[in-house]
Length: 586
Picture (tube, helix red, strand yellow):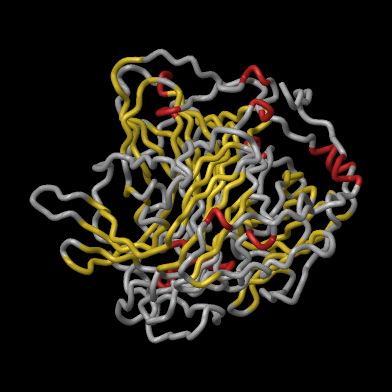
C-alpha cells in the first residue's frame, strides 16, 4: 500500500527515518522527573503486523481484593478503610497465544501489578480506599527514570491525592492515595505525569475503578438490583495500539504522537485483548465502557455483519454516563444514533441479546469512525457469539433511572459564567492562550458556588475536556440541547471543532487547586492544561510528596482528619431533581 506525501504529512510521517526505540524517539535524555515535553515521535509505518480478529476470548478481570482480606466489592460498614497495594512495573504480557505451530507473541508493557490493563477495583459507596502505589518501573529506552503521578479520574479527591501533574512518584518511591468513594460511578485510574501522560498511559498505566450503585442512587429505590449483575455485568476498556516486530515471539509497543496531534494506532484492544470475542447468552448484559485510548474517539454501534453496518434496529441502551445513572434510558440505533465516546468518557450500556432472531449467531460491536481521528476508519472491534437458546432473565431497565438535578434549577442558582478557549498556537496547545504553569490560576470559584463554564473550540481539532473534582451537566452545544445520553452527570465533554459547549457545576466538596485539560493526552502534554482553585486556604496539591522505599506499613498511615469546613451555606442547598428524592435511610 502506497501513502501519498499529503497523507504522510497528516500522519506525521514525512521526514522520519528509521524505526527507533519502542517509545518512538531516541537520544533524548533527561535527568529529573520535571522535564521538558517529549519530542515528537518518529515512526516509519503506522501499520502493525497482522492480527487475526476474533480469535481470542475477551479477558474478564477479577476485582482486586483489599490487603485486609475483605470482599472485592468493599462490603461492610461505611466509613471503613480498605487498603490496597499496587506496584507499577514493567511486565511481559501475552498478546496472542501460540497457535498453528507458531509461538505465543508477547509484548512489554508498563503495568499496575503486572496486569494489562491494571487491576479492576470495586468499592462500595461511602467506604474509603487507601491505595499505595509503588514505582518500580525502572528506566525508559533512553535510560531516564520513569516517573509517575496517579489520578483516579472522576473521584472527588483532596488536592494532594488527585494526581496533580507535578506531584510525581520518582523511581523507587511510593505514595498513599486516599479516596472517599462518595459517589457511585464508573471511574478509572491512570498516569498523570507532567508532559509524559500520553506515553505512560499508552504504555499500559490505566485501569478501571467502579464505585457500586446503592439504593439511594435510583429514582425509585425498589429498582435497586434491577440491572444485570454478576457474570452479566462486564467492563469493556477500549484502547488502540501500534506494534512493531522485535522477534518471532515478541512485538513491541510503538509510541508516536504525530507532532503532538495525537496518538492514533491500528490495533484495538478491549480489556487488553486484540479484537476479542465473547460468548453471550440470549439475555440482557450490562457493559461498563471506558475509552482509555490516548487520543481516539469512537462511535459505537451494533451490526450483524463484520464488514458493514446492518440497519436492523438493534439498539444499544445507555443507562449511565461518566458520573452516575441517567435520569432515563437512552436507546441508540445506528446509523443515525451511534454512541460517541471520547477519550476518558465512560458509559454504562445494556445490550439485550434475547431480541436477536434465532438465526443470528454473531453480533459485532463496530466503530463507525470519527472525522477528527487520524487513520483507521470504520471497523469491527469485537464479536459477540450468541448461544442458541434463550435463558431466564429477571433484569429490567426502569423508565426512570437515577437522580439527576434539573439543569434549569442549576442554571437559576449559578453565580458566574467563565469562558475558556481551547486552541493551538505554534507547536503548543493552550487554554485562553496559556500553557501549563503551576503559578497560574485560571479561575477561583468559591466553595460550593454553582458556575457556568463556556468551553470554546477555536477550530482545527476535537478536544475531550476534563474538569477535575466536579461532576457537571451539559447545558447546550452551540445553543442546542446535549445528546440524550449526555444528559446526566459527567466529568468529560467532547468539544467538537468550532463548537461552544456550556457546562454547569457546583464546585465542591473540597477546597484547593485542581486541573482542567484536554484529554487527548498528546494535547494535554503539549500543553493544553490549566488549573483552577476552589475557595481559599485549601491543601497544597504538593503537600504530601512521595516517599522513598522501603515503605512503612500501610496500617500506620491514615488520611488527614482535618475537614473542609466550615462549609458555606450554599453547600447545603438541595435543588429539584427529575424524581422525588428518596429517604436517605430507606
